Amino acid sequence: MKYDVAIIGGGPAGYTAAERAAQGGLSTILFEKNALGGVCLNEGCVPTKTLLYSAKTYDNIKHASKYAVKAENPSFDLPKIIARKNKVVKKLTAGIRMKMTEHGVVMVTAEACIQGRAADGTITIAAGEELYEAANLLICTGSETVIPPIPGLAETEYWTSREALQSKELPASLVIIGGGVIGMEFASFFNSLGVEVHVVEMLDKILGPMDRELSEMLQAEYAKRGIKFYLSHKVTGVHGTEVSVEKDGETFTLHGDKVLLSVGRRPVTKGFGLETLAPETFRNGVKVNEYMQTSLPNVYACGDITAFSLLAHTAVSEAEVAVDHLLGKSRPMSYKAIPGVVYTNPEIAGVGKTEEELQAEGISYTVKKIPMAFSGRFVAENEMGNGVCKLILSEDETLIGAHMLGNPASELIVIAGIAIEKGMKSDELKSFVFPHPTVGEIIKEALY
Image (cartoon, rainbow, N blue to C red; front, side, top):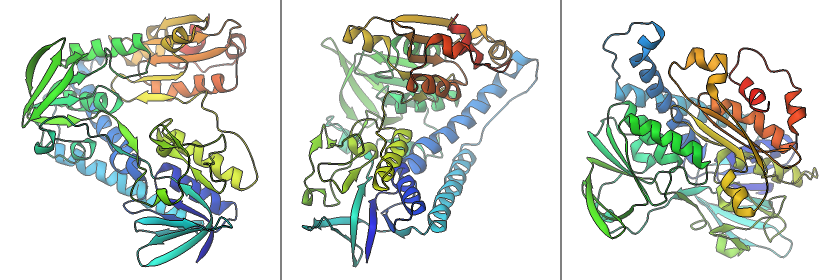
């Protein structure tokens, strides 16, 4: 059984590559040991956003009086929220499977293991009881939760995102270890449902590399809602419901009925025979060129395994670049405008350079910043809400960064991303006609 291309991993990179390769006329086989859709669809992006939308709806009902609407004694049903999340995931995974079938992708639900690469480049893969051969290989194995060596953690029944997404009972209190994107989205969800939330973060800010000013504004908003933040704090031990934290030599204990671990993710590089190919490495993943080729020309790597941008939409774009290269349509992968979004309420999003990055690189820039309240649509739909649109321009007025706090930042950031990718200058972006009234107009307003 020999194929033009074999793909290991059925997440966003894998299923995108499989569909595109098959559409291009390549005989394609896809190996996925768990469920199609990978972490993103089954225990990441989609299920968390489904839960967050339920929480947002509940928040809106609780504050309906701001909009002259009366809603007495609103409540929620957590098991039904979880059941709806499962229904959404099931529907979307079925859609992916249908696409694979339509395009003639051979799907193997088994753990794949690379057996070796012959002199002519042919790659042999074992899965189940069978051996398969492929002229080209795409490695799309994704990432896994980082489990740090915190004393006592191994003996504690802690949550990762997987367990948090399945729980049908709310803890009275929750300690979240890690204030990055995953940590903050779960903090938002559980805070909205009335859980006492504590967020412990080693850095001096939440949301890692995202714009500091807007991250601090989001933190202040959630602090008002009752979330307790412990920045520049290190977790020194977890023992049952007790979490020991330390800062500047002083140690104290936090109590949480549950502990949620969200300190990051790392590429999956073991367990599928990658060592038989021994590709060149990068950080804790696999090194690739601009066409997603590894040091072995017929072996490509896409998604989290490249250890560069652990985002589903990056993985999709990388898969498109890799398959295009296989099909002879060479176009390099660009990382100039990869949007990052946090689906809290309000949302925060950024694309391109941050002020902090430019300062560290010694690059001159100017900032155009305007409150979201300058948008009539935003004021109409966000009573007492605040937010900011920050645009960063180079010396020649080219847009090189954009950062937004306020709903719906996740939908607006793509406008700025396209402008950054295309190297648009301020005057060019201002020349476009934005519909009125929309929150998106804020981008144009900010440039004046």
